[in-house]
Amino acid sequence: MILLTGSTGFKWSRLAFWLHSMWAKVIGYWLEPNTNPNLFGALKLKDKITQIIWDISDYENLEKVVDQYQPEIIFHLAAQPIVRESYDDPVYTMQTNVMWTVNIMELIRTKEYIKWGVIVTTDKVYENKEWLRPYRENDRLGWFDPYSSSKAMAELAVESYRKSFLQKIDKKICVVRSGNVIWWWDWAKDRLIPDIIRSLQNNENVVLRNPDAVRPWQYVLDALHWYLIAWMKMFEGDQYQWAYNFWPDITDTLKVIDIVKQSIEILQKWWYEVRPETNQWKHEAWLLLLDNTKSKTLLWWSSKYNVYNALIKTLNFYKEYYDWKNMEEYAIKEIETFL
Image 1 (cartoon, one colour):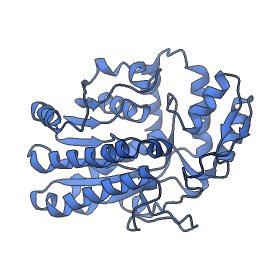
Image 2 (cartoon, rainbow, N blue to C red):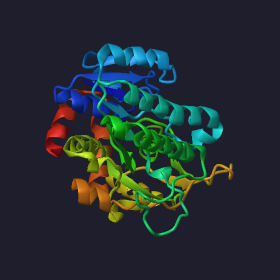
Image 3 (cartoon, one colour):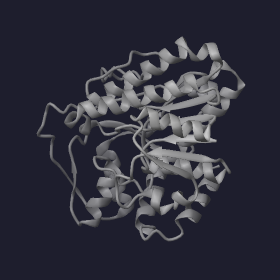
Image 4 (cartoon, rainbow, N blue to C red):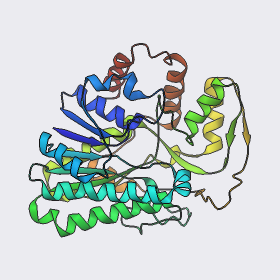
């Protein structure tokens, strides 16, 4: 039995569908979908998994659910994931990203039947000095905006639980940090690919705040596949209980404007305009690089798709499958092709 926490966004829904396709029994603990359309509905996941719609901050109810179903593994994806929203509501961001993680760690600590935890954070947890050296897993955590800082705090809580409690009771846990994940059926605001698709649908120029910002771009199955690998490697021993950078190679770390121009080439229409952020106090990093040596060495991490291939697959899907036809069949075939 596997417990997945988080919203019904495209990344969470894709992982739930993948696990279900492997005959896993999945319990989803989340809030209602925050976009319409959403992948959760398109993949008909409510007919495939056990769904609990509730707030993870309610520890009493969360504990009742896990006692009822007794999952052995928790994949914790629940978060407030948008940097700019964290400036508008820092209290909610901190409560969500830190205390929800603490609640999950407390369950892992106190429930004998829970043996493993995979905690999904972000590449933005590092104290980013915006230099050219990629950050390694043992570099200092903490950053400027409330979102990044909250995820760093969450990781400190995870490490505290691991060292203080979990090592003594043979519970295993790892932290995974991935880059900017792209894939079809992402409709969240303030994300580049959904913004491009919405501008195309509305026959408008996409608005870029910071075209020279450097980001990693990663195919979603590349990230989710290695979340699963990290969990399975923990069966082999304590030496795999680490934080891992599941980060694409440097060739897939491009400026926003590079992604936009490649998208124009793929879509063969539409244009952009640059409109700098008027609220200058809403700082966003312009450069972020992570080192993936540990993941490659210990887990044999590698990306199956480069950024251009990932863009082609993602954007062509938006064009061809927006009418929801054969969504489940398409998703299964995609997994089979990837593997």
